[in-house]
Length: 550
Ligand SMILES: Cc1cc2nc3c(=O)[nH]c(=O)nc-3n(C[C@H](O)[C@H](O)[C@H](O)COP(=O)(O)OP(=O)(O)OC[C@H]3O[C@@H](n4cnc5c(N)ncnc54)[C@H](O)[C@@H]3O)c2cc1C
Image (cartoon, rainbow, N blue to C red; front, side, top):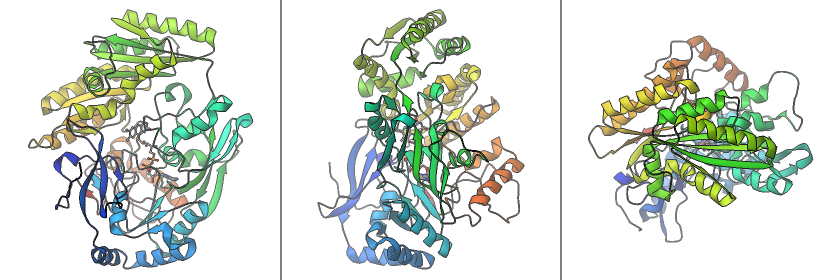
């Protein structure tokens, strides 16, 4: 359906916009394609807010946006890399106003569509010369607002840097540009019997550069480790505008582990322009089972028994009744009827070992109370078992018009307690919480469901979401497992770290970025930079200056 709405605000059903798309020029209208959820039509692309393009409107706004240092930076970058790669049209810039955490929106002052490392370097150097902040953006799927632009800054978009520059099967590594999509690396490596192990659920769309910046994880990271375990080297444009190589194709380099510091730094220590990733040999055998339980307690007991027995599954994922219901409605995954929880367990490795371990896993599930165990006999059946889990986040849109995706970690043994406490929090607040998570490493992804049309429900959901993080901390866990801190959780950092801890981290940041230009306002509760006086950070600090909160 195409509509021409006069209003400049998205309609109510679009309040949680997941992915803005480029404007539709063919029709002569401009607007954004928004990936929206609606109870009846989840995850559909809908062009909204279409209106005739007004050139004069566009230029007046552009001029206003580009006064001061930004105008100088725009001219400088255009002179260095060509005008066509630099976007200053406010309408087009709107495309980049948010990442996957769409309720924070800031239109960037300027966007650079970098095609190579030299473009990135030119953009950073121009920013440094004019003391203008810059933010790197991969595919914009981040869920913590890490790629939220600055209205007074430059967004450096890596989506055109998608070359796989080299496959080195004998060295089990590949050299790729940062905009390369995660799954593309595995596709390219498959003929060599290799794959790229970190597999975020967003792997069909997220970029390697974004994965590096967020130290992304995925279902199979329990056995294979997070992104940091699979990055051998990075070429980086530093916040001073230099191009440097950290690490390389060898497994180890002497000296300080700067690569370790860079991975997971959320774009605050520079922009990766090339990444050398480790490739992992495909296992001889993969076996997958789905076990249905009456409750999350029973499923949790099975997880503890499996891990406690020394088995390290490739993946061990849990879904509770609500997320099973959502997946059923969305993709008809046919999980065991009436299950209060399901466990999806995957074992891989040499055949003899897998056969033995798989039998152990089945035994632990049965002993913990599994009332049904399904074993995938073929690749197709395996894909079918995974279908419900992989679609779970999106599927929740089928049973709730709005939801917040939370990300926290607890020690595995605390899972049952924390799941109960979350249920109580939700009941008290009158909202629902669906759980789908990496059970093996205690990485929770509670989905707090609410209906923004009901008075006060959004606020209550937000409170429950915050209280869940408190629960994680109180049980010795962490405020994020894999989605990063970004803008969203900067305010929670003082709950986990002392002022001294935060100042020590800031010192590292300042060593890379003394001017504080690389992705300022992210990760830390204040953009305190070198030379500023330390102070006690407060948990009340919220959205960055200039961000519109929807
Ligand atoms: C449906 C869905 C499921 C998801 N599932 C998972 C999951 O299972 N596991 C998981 O870990 N995450 C998951 N995510 C979150 C997200 O996909 C990851 O954080 C991903 O790594 C972000 O990649 P991106 O290319 O979209 O980065 P962006 O969102 O564009 O940017 C993320 C951060 O990286 C920085 N950055 C981007 N490129 C560079 C670069 N070249 N150099 C330096 N900094 C850079 C940005 O400044 C920003 O701080 C999911 C997201 C969605 C929408």
